[in-house]
Amino acid sequence: MGSLLALVGSPSAAELLAWSPPGWGATLVAGLWNSILIALGAYALGLAIGIGGAFGKVYGGPVLRDLLEAYTTLVRAVPELVLILILYFALTDAVNKIIALWDYGPIQLSGVAAGIGVLGVVQGAYSTEVIRGAILSVPHGQIEAARAMGIPPVLLARRITLPLMLAAAIPGLANLWLIVTKDTALLAVVGFVELTKATSLAAATTKAFFTFYAAAGVLYLILSLGSTVIFHRIERWARRGQRPLSGGGR
Amino acid sequence: MIAFLRPVHRQIMLAVALAAVAASAFLLDWGWLPRYLPLIAQGVWTTLWLTVVTMSLGMVLAIGLGFAQAAGPMWLAWPARVYCTIIRGTPLLLQLWLLYFGLGAFFPQFPELRQSFLWPILREAWPYAVLALTLSAAGYEGEVMRGAFRGVPHGQIEAARAMGMPRFTLFRRIWLPQALHRALPTIAGETVLQMKSTPLVATITVLDIYSVARRVTQDTFIVYEPLVLLAIVYIIIAGLIVLFFRKLEARLPARMA
Image (cartoon, rainbow over all chains, first blue to last red; front, top):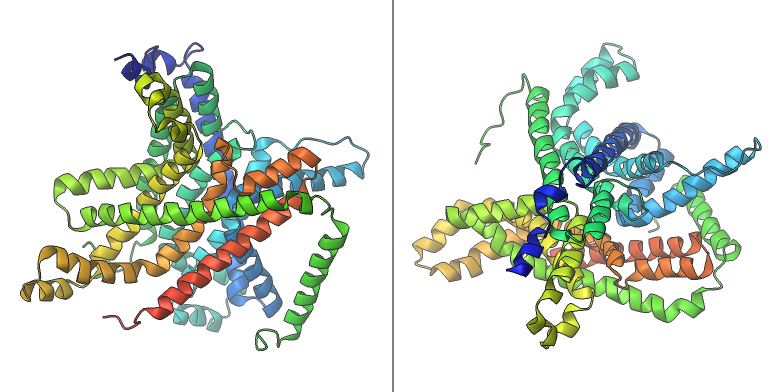
C-alpha cells in the first residue's frame, strides 16, 4: 500500500500541484506558457521559411532549387537535438562575433530567441515540403488564367496560389504544429525551462515523479487535442466553397 | 551520377562542397578522433541496435494496435485509440523521463525485486530506453497500420471469406501482407524518425553516439568537431535506412489493385 501511495505521490497530488509555492502548479503553467511561446514563434518562422522555400523550389532557378533541396534533405536527416546544439552554438558564436565588431562584450543568446531560431529552421525544412506539395496541387489553369490577366507574380501568389493551396496544406501544417509543440521539449536538454524541464525540476525536488510527469503529460495532451480542434475549424474554413470530397468519411 | 553532374552549377556546387570538406578536415581539430574511436564505434552500434530493436518490437505491437482500431470490437478499438492518442500527444522526452525516473524510483521499494535475478537489468538505463522507444514507435506505427488495414480493398477480404479461409489464415495470408505493403513507404520514413529520436536516450545515461560526442566536448572543450561528426554519422545512417527500404520495396511485387 505504501508503494502504491508513492506511485501517486505521498504528499497528496493535489497539494503538490497546488498553484501557490508549496505546490508547483504555477511553475508548470509558466513552463507550458514558455513552450507555447517558443512553439508559436518557431512555427511562424518555419512558415515564413516554408513559403519562401516552396516558391523557390517550384519556380526558382536550378541553383536555388539544388540549394533548397540540400537544406531540406540535410535538416530532415539529422536529429533535432543535434541541430539544436549545432545551431545554438553557431548562432551564439555568430551573434557574438558580429557584436564584437562594435566593441561590445559577448552576450548569452536568450533561451527563447535561440529556441525559436533553431526550431524555426528545422520547421522550415518540413513546411517547405508540405507547402511545395500544396502549391503543386493548385489547378494549373487558375495560375495560367491569372498570368493571362497580367497579374504580377507577388500579387498572384498572394491572391491566387496561397489561398487555393491552403486547403491542401492545412493537414500537413497541422501535423507540423503538433510536432513543434512536442519538439519544444528538446530545449530541456540545453537547460531551457519549458514545460518538460520545469516538470523534471519539480519531480527531482519532491521525488513525486509519476505525479508531475503525468500532470505535464495531461497539459501536453490538452494542448495537442485543443490544437487539433482548432485546425479542424481552420480546414473547414479553408475548404469553404469547395465541393465536399467524394467517398470521404469511411 | 553523370547525368546528375552534367549542369555546370552542380559541378561548381560539388567543388564548393568538397572544398568545405577539405577545409573542415585540415582547419578543424581532429586530434581527438583516434583516441575516441573505440568509444565512437560502441556509440554507433548502440544507436543502430536501438533503432532496429525498438522499431521491430514497436511494429509487432503496432500491428495489434492498428488491427484493433481498424477491425476490432469496441472494447479493443477504444483502448488502442486512447493509447495512440496519448503517445502521439506527449513528447517522447517526457515519456522517457517518466519511465526512467518514475519506475526507477518505484522499483526499489520492493525488496523481493531487489533480490531477484531481474535486478541487475532493472538497475541499468538501457531497458528503460528500449521500453520508451518501443512504446513510442508502437503508438505512431499503430496509427499508420490502422490506415493501412483499412486501406486493404474489401473485395480481397470478402473473396478470402467466400473461399472459406479460416480467420487467422485470412489475417496472415491476405490482410496483413497487403496492409504492410501499403504502409511500407510510410514506415521507411518513420524508421528514419525513430533513428532521429534515439539521441534522447543520452539524457538517461545510455552511451549512444550522441552521448559519446557530448563526452568528447566535456573532456576536451572542443565544440564543433564532435557535432560535425554526429551530423555525418546520422546522415549516413538515415541514408542506409532509406536504401534498405528502397531495396525492400523493389523486391515486393509492385502491382496493386
